[in-house]
Image (cartoon, rainbow, N blue to C red):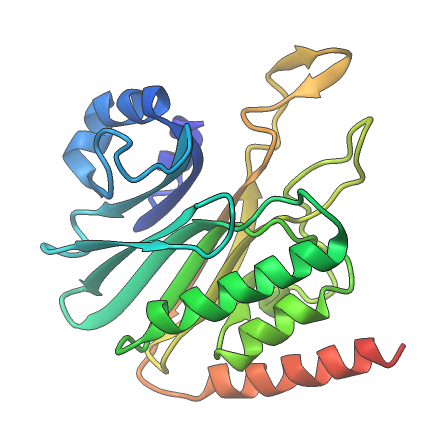
Length: 254
């Protein structure tokens, strides 16, 4: 999986469900040591036996500050985010998160996600015009998840896959014997006129073996890669937010 990720030459990476042993393997790779800053070196930021990790390309910024924000909720997870200046001038916050996993009824998880997004998004975007949050949000983008999308829009954030490809579900978890295909994994953003999404694609779809009669891929969740353009101006974000709110209201009425 690390080879797949590094082949994309990403400026920032969000890793999910990383154990201390996996983190040690990642940080032992000479490519990571040479090219990336890491938000954690030992697993100290993990509340459970696993957590999220952010890596930032050293060539993007000479200085990176990492912050930890505890999420509300019984699973005691955290948002980890990096603050840096892209190309030395464009301020960016890039975060990784793993929202609450379903442990009760749908009303419980909706409330948990709503509370967590309402808490972390203002922190992530405070005093920073270009904020990104990536990870397993534990809600399926192919379902009518108006509560989460409304929370994103209220805080000035858009789901970048849906923005680029509104008619493509972009499944990051394939269909299995137990579950239908879905998209739990997202990259959301609130950006200034300086940054605009160019494209997105999914990696890690190749079959590398078989397990219990099913195809085995590098991970049970596919990787999501988003590319941005650096612009001189424009107002694409406000226009897209207005369109997204209209879509939410239209879908609610169906």
